[in-house]
Image: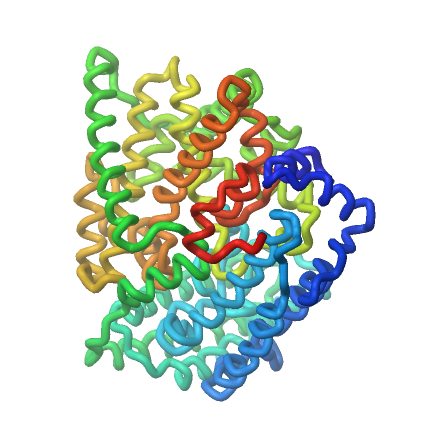
Length: 555
């Protein structure tokens, strides 16, 4: 057990002794209640993780109507087995794991009842993802077996080459099945699917160019896949012309999803209020910072790739040094490498500089705080959580408030702790980013309530982002609103998650008074894993008021 994990458990309702006994017993669990031991929960979890995957034949996952109906029927058996557990005598940390499994099962149920990405959302059938994501798993509903192309660096070993060839060769069959499966004409999702097909064709063209030298035998396979995507795009365009069905899920479904899947104790209406407040606060703080800095020269974008690289590396070193010198949390030895390895490319002024490029080229320091993502992922890989249920990324993006909220929250947390004291103009960037995230989040909320169309969500985000830095033609706003429409709550997770973490820190400070230590609190926060903030708060503070609104904690 890691020190951070142990600290977390000591803060969870005073049950450290019981958990220590579990560890000494090889994690066998407490004396078996009628509903089973902790080890039985782990066994069920592993069965569940295999069950939720679709059947696969020749790299083609089965999302047909018959297969999905059968899966939904069998899901009830897993939920009944889980409901039979009596966790009333378990340590809070183990009860948390129980509710994580419960949330995942609710996620699949919601997919079948409401989201139905395999029959409503053409973007679900995206197969190619060229770049890694900065969160525990790919954002949004993603088809099983999608190709993370960045995991195939050229030149490939023979076995990896054969694997990639087979997976690429399955794309025509996948899209043929998609044409049968997609029966609900959610107009904005289909419009986004048309655009996504164009992006995928570009990715395949780039792959063909890369493969031509080291692996020319791949090129015909890629070309057939690209032709299938082009045909799918034409198919979508022809049917989209007559569609009028909304793509949002409605406020009632949104509230159910937040409560039962993402374990967020805020309703749709409460999140609207939070986002409105944070959007106003971001703009007002920006103007106060500008007033303070009016005698200073503006930030100028880096003029060359070399200048950008130098700024990026210096910012990563400064951020890690700041975290250590101010004892914000215990910084792992791999933190700097995790940040430096994720340097983006320089965008010349002759090309569109979308929102985050505008920020990065002016000063790399604020976004290095958001780089907590990469430290989180490195910690997950290098320091696996002792709980097998928390060791792997949670399904259905259940980690979003923790991952995105913490990365966003660290920008302002570090600012307030002194990170940018000697870079006053960079402080302005923090509030510009907060305004942008709040503006994008409103699209998430209003599209699902039916108050915004896709175009209106994009227009709102562009209008409320300072200085016109969010381009209506750029990939940022299109990717984000596509994600939020397919994955309710992801857009709000950056800002609402940040506010939620603020509450956890405030609760801990009130509990400990003069004994409060930011470093110890954040170490325990990290030790809890990438799970919903409501559960981390319960585990760290023992406060169950939030989880009481989500479920009745069994004590």
